[in-house]
Amino acid sequence: MKKVLSGMRPTGKLHLGHYLGVIKNWLELQEKHDCKFFIADWHALTNKYKQTDDLKENIKQMIIDWLSCGIDPEKATLFIQSGVKEHAELSLLFSMITPKSWLELNPSYKDLKFNLYYQYLRDFLAGKQVKIIQTPPSEDFDQAVERASGKVRNKIFEEYLREAFFRAFYNKKGIDFKGLKETLIKLGIQKKIVEEAVKNLEEGDVGKDIDTLGFLAYPVLQAADILIYKAEAVPVGEDQLPHIELTREIARRFNNLYDSIFPEPEAMLTEESKLPGIDGRKMSKSYNNAIYLSDDQQTVNKKVLEMKTDPQRVRRNDPGNPEVCIVYDYHRIFTDKDTVKDIDKKCRNAEIGCVDCKKILAQNLNRFLDPIRERRKEIEKDLPTYEKIFQEGTEKAKAIASETMTEVRKAMRLWEF
Ligand code: TRP
Ligand code: SF4
Image 1 (tube, rainbow, N blue to C red):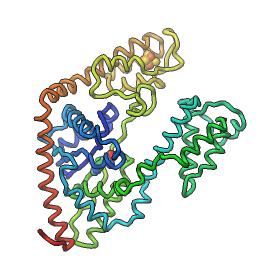
Image 2: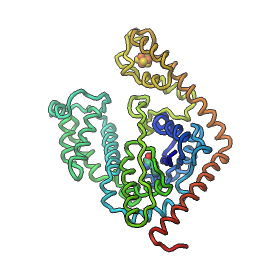
Image 3: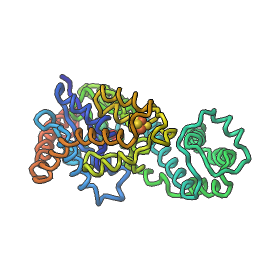
Image 4: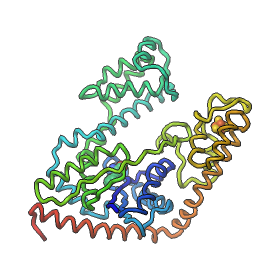
């Protein structure tokens, strides 16, 4: 039995990707370990401080989503970060002993910037009618640049765009805007459009929002979240590993400087869900391709009907290839093994039509979601009662956090009130 802690930023309703990637894992952990799960609302502020109108609503949605999935307050302590002010105190004290360079070198910080810039570039080009094509090309990137040189096509493979930007972003200390411009033009996008896009990136506001102290100190707050409960294991996705490493470094530094009171927590790596969104891209709110845990039956039916299938299968009697079909990716997870086998065979022999295949999937998805929907209905009928669970959880967490803080103040020889 380990002390396990994890948190989630309240950024909106949860979808199937969150369920398979995170919640499913938490459901297993709560059976075996001493778990604390919390809503990291202060962390949501680090990049969303300008739009706080929906923060309360997002926290509510998160409460409903967690509980309706079966995250159980009898088994795990559930709380809201901003209710335990001690996190802020510990974060402040940690900031005294954390070298700035540890934060500036943090890859997650750079990656977030990368994503913001890249997303902007992508959207800008799409807005200028540059076609961005999803299917990854088989060709090597450098060869592709060579071959495309000079031809104006106004059409680019997403993989190439990403690669071009990746090189511009990570090869040098700053961003190599000049190199980026040259590569994109070589790849066949109109010079005028490229110049405008890159100029906006260089001089515009993209990414400036997160040039704040709070954002830079994000991992310090996260270290405080974890260490204040002396957690031993932290289930997180791969993107969070640098934050856990930093937490360990801060713990070590504190223990060396003062008294040894903090354990060095381990990351418990959670595999990211590979389930694509209905258009085949990564499932994400921003791509508008997600199936939400709160979607009703009709919405799910509609989304399943919209799913991309094997593009080679145009007519009903064309044989299909389930390996390249999104519907099939879903069947693998939500349909029983025998039926999956059967579909595989019938698809390859053109014995089943895509619409029928989708109907089976929609049924199974709805069967999976139904119990969650039932619980959601119960919870929504009496939300204050369920919010109280989080109030009580917050009190419980606070009791532990304040004990640790007494130890911390003592170790640091601070004034004791
Ligand atoms: N940074 C985490 C994320 O974006 C959320 C988080 C905040 C967290 N504090 C935490 C996760 C402490 C684990 C432990 O996913
Ligand atoms: Fe995909 Fe099913 Fe159509 Fe085959 S029959 S292409 S698995 S939707």
